[in-house]
Image (tube, rainbow, N blue to C red; front, side, top):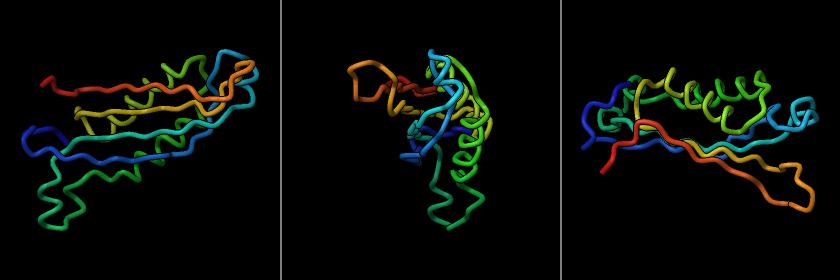
Length: 129
């Protein structure tokens, strides 16, 4: 799906995709894996799908969920930044060059004395206002 008219863009938000991936600086993170949460937003023209109730005129977000779940199982890398890059590439491969935003959360980073999470937010093709 290509962005044709920014005046007619709507967005699809997919939230809280549970992922398990082998991402981290420590060898045990890449060996054992750990949980991540992913939210993403894609902006596309949903007007025809909304008016006509036509599935072929919208983005099938289930394809993205399944594809990213598989990616998370296959990947083994050092940084959440690289993981996020591969997610953005996967979304662009599915939906084309449309505005995309992701929020990727490493749920339990192994940092002594730290019980929080670490997140990264990235976007592509977001028009400047």
